[in-house]
Length: 122
Image (cartoon, rainbow, N blue to C red; front, side, top):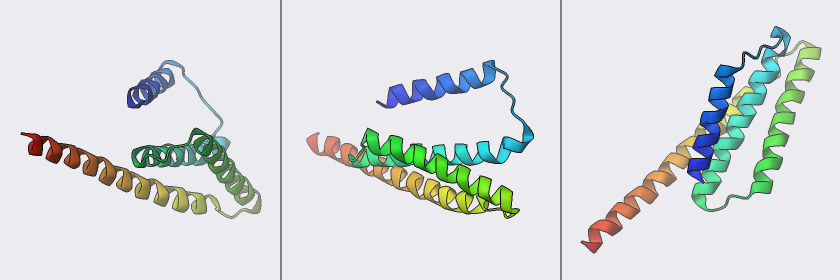
C-alpha cells in the first residue's frame, strides 16, 4: 500500500514538472486552500491507516468535504472582503501537524515494538 502511494506521489510530482500548468492569479487562494485541505486529508488517512482504522469511503468524502469547505470559506471571504481563508489555514494546518505528529508516534511505536520483539527472540 505504501509503495503504491509513493509511486502515485512521484508520478504526480513528475507530471507537475513536465506539464507547464498556469492559472490566473485570482485563483491562487482557492488553489492554496484546496492543496491544504488535500494535504490534511492525506495525512489524516495515513494516521488512520497506521491505527488500523482506514476506510476509503471516509477518506474520499472527507477529502471532498474539506476541499469544498476550504473553497466556500475562501469564496465567501473574497466576496465579503474578509480573509475567511485564515480560518481554513488555522484549522487544516493545525490538524495537519497533529495528524503528522500522531502518525510519527504510531510508526515509531510499531518500529520499537517490532525491534523489541526481535531482540526477545534472540
